[in-house]
Image (cartoon, rainbow, N blue to C red; front, side, top):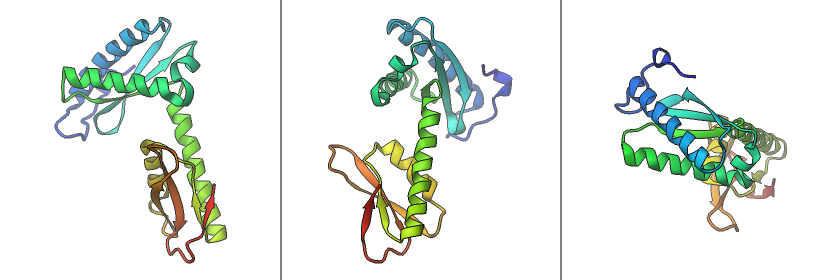
Length: 182
């Protein structure tokens, strides 16, 4: 549980630590109401301050799988609805990240492993590696993980799947343009 005394100034525009705390507390109450309306009466919500004026609302529930949904569709929709509610209430409210049973943390770890495995394949083979199609937020994690490793670079390209792109991890100085699928 986040106490007001634990809040430091946050570097997101003019949003102060106290405003993040207030916004996060309101978001927790709204999320609790949404979860109850969805039938998750047993859900427990913890509030954590994140970087740049964001708050993390971590949910624990006996029905975590149902709350996450296939491909995190339920979790993503819940986060979207909560952020729309908060934005409509106060345009300066903190952005809310909703996580269930550390799903987003584990997903990020899998993406980082995929990025580092692809970098290693590129270093060994000298050929670019094309990753599976993924949403923009996942691509951003891959791009950020690879940035700063001078011998490789990343770029996004259109994928066959509607609305998704894929990340290509390539040698910094790509020779023959050949690409491997991951």
